[in-house]
Length: 116
Image (cartoon, rainbow, N blue to C red; front, top):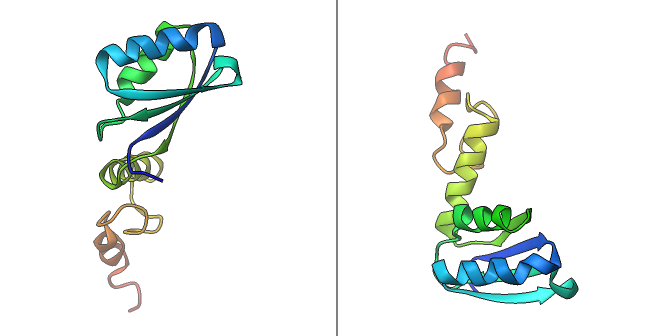
């Protein structure tokens, strides 16, 4: 296992190679085809998953689904922080566990004086 971002893309086999060609015009990527082109594994050469670019090209070429399978630690940390903010905006579930520094002090402040 390397550290380069890896995407799993599922789309119409007739459009997959067109999407990959368009993506290669914008980003450095290696592509591996499975299911006669309906499943594409993309290994990005830069440390940027290019999510908006990739998903935009998938929509442009008939739609499909993209899943980030592997990313660098900073990208995973950013994703974890965004997920935590979306699903727990008040930061009451496991403060500090999912995203480092995500408000463990919040729980301490909210429970001050509760024991007295």
